[in-house]
Amino acid sequence: MKKYSFKNDYSEGCHPNILQALIKTNLAPQNGYGYDDYSEEARKLIKNKINDQNADIHFVSGGTQANLLVISSVLRPHESTISAETGHIFTNETGAIEATGHKIHGIVTADGKLKPEHIQSVLDSHTNKPHQVKQKLVYLSNSTEIGTIYQKQELKELYEFCQANNLYLFLDGARLGQALTSEINDLTLEDVANFTDVFYIGGTKNGALLGEAIVITNDNLKEDFAFQVKQKGAMLAKGRLLGIQFLELMKNDLYFDLAKHSNVQAMKIKSAFQNRGFQFLSDTFTNQIFPILINSQIEKLSGKFDFYVWKKMDEDNSAIRLITSWATSDEVVEGFLKEIELL
Image (cartoon, rainbow, N blue to C red; front, top):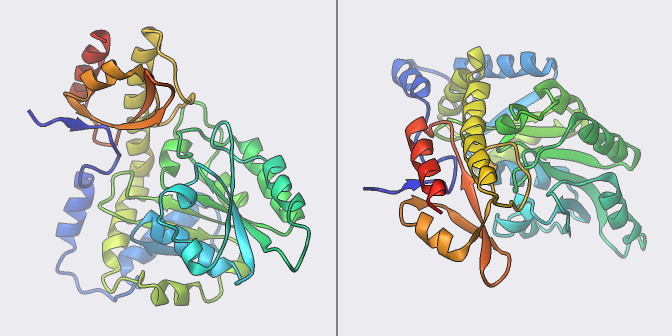
């Protein structure tokens, strides 16, 4: 029997509604490069959901591409960005940002989240201008790489701090759907738009074949962004393929329904580990969980399921990462719960 993978939330293809929409619209001639009817309609839906008709929205194919496009377009050659050390741009993008000539200041955090005092510590240690790089952008992800989320007050405080210190705030939303549908969340999509300068809505990890929607709300960052998209090879001739997907995800709130499903499935697994007395690397309420297991238990589980061994805790114990998706079935979860009972 093929092992089910809890390694990521993009192992499956896409939600059937998207496949059906792609087939239905397949032979309809459309303008290229994102000027098709479907992309325009998807942009309207997103603007309505964030309550900002002046936002600029650009559809691109992936998260690393979105991060690279935003950060490289925002920063001048002598400017840098601030990120938690767990941030995707710091750990898992092959130096994509550094390759454009921009330094990333990595900050160690207990829960993967940045706070104003973290940012202030970087500013305080870079006062010898112009001999040191100038900090200009703060990078967040919600949910974070270790599954935690920002509350409304936390994001608001960060945004106000950035405004007071002439910094841009950029939110990586690869798993934004999961953050916004978490049982402990108090943010809305409109809040995210209000308390950032630019963010993106991740589709790849929430039911799309591929795709992210970059949303720019700060007028200072809008000019010439399309040139950046084209220059870096991110402007698809068949942009309709991205527009159709986000149109399907956004209408009738399918995007949020899929994210909530992935969270619910993860919380079932989390509860099963909790009931057996297991500890966790971080306390999460999204579709990522990090239980700490004895290495022999990890070996036993890996015989039937795929997952990452995330962090070695000591010689005998390690934290594993389990991720559920929009397509993780009740049957798969029940099978995993039975295995937990046997540990």
